[in-house]
Image 1 (cartoon, rainbow, N blue to C red):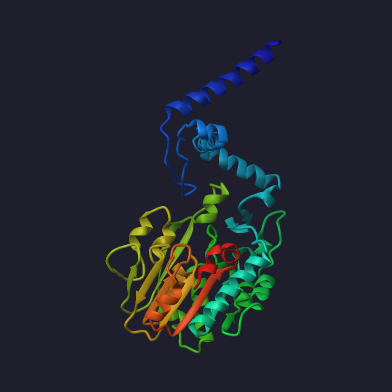
Image 2: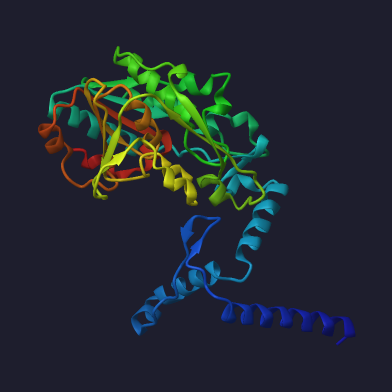
Amino acid sequence: MKKRDTVTCLLFCGFLVGAMLLFLLLPKAAFSEKEKRYLTEAPAFSWEALASGAFGADLEAYLADHVPGRDGFVGLCAYFDLLTGRQIDAPVYAARGGRLLEPPAAWDPDAAARNMDAISKFASAVGQRVDVLLIPSAGAALEDTICGLHDSYDDEAMIRDIYAMAGDNVSCLDVTDTFLQSPRREELYYRTDHHWTSLGAYRGYRAYQQLRGRTWLPEEAFSVETVPGFRGSTYSRSGLWLTKPENLELWQAEGDFTVTNAETEGTHDGLFYRERLEELDKYTVFLDGNHSLVRIHHPQGQGNLLVIRDSFSNCLGTFLANSYETVTLVDLRYYKKPVSELFAEEAFTDVLVCYSIGNFLTDPNLIWLR
């Protein structure tokens, strides 16, 4: 064996031994701050798990989550894929201006029909009109900024086809022009998160109030507080760790607001949970994030609104609260009681189903809207 081959072999073996020693000696983190998720715990051994292959799969996931220098390797892989034009298979697309976008939602006609049928049946069961608002994705609005090859976004066509399935008691609000054609569309979505910004949520609030023939607060009625250092969900999934943070805005109008939810005891004064701004997931400043049921009370408002929603309504709810006496937000991922019973207990003047297009096509819980 040549001397060069011997040195190469020794270096490789040394790398393996060093990596093994680092894995054994370094403490294991339970949570990844960059990815904002809990890492896999060491699997418990059993002969049954070994025979079924479950132990091997769990062990592989555990080793992958705790390899020394994991964040660096994840970032290196992400930037290599970006530079070599392989981001078409990446979990997040990179776009100009440090923007990170979710890939297009996959069209599922069966899911679309099933969910719209569930909404139509619910409207008939409660004997009241139900409004539907589907939000196009940031990728659809900003597709021209994506760097390199990517799958195309068909949000406008998908939303149109879904709305065509609505029953007689369902009213559909089309905001695709507002979000896809707006000259300010880059301001309507975050750069590092899949949600709409406060400006985007305000546009959704205004459009819904217009649909219902109700008054709404103009932009000038809000004082805007800018919070720096926000990095959202697309950043956490991208591996592109050099992406700069952005600002998050809190729009506050005059009025008395109190918030309660089904999981936390007590009443919260104000729409924003400012203590969440000190945490990694700053988006939970809006109504404390996801809860099965959230109720906002505003004595100066008029009417009682029920919102069947996903996480986009965490921010939207802070605007709707300005126009209603009570806004009740129900997340069917966690709320397991019949919504019709809640409807019978309270006199809702308006009912809104609000989802992003991606969540509407993948959420299996709308069938429990009963």
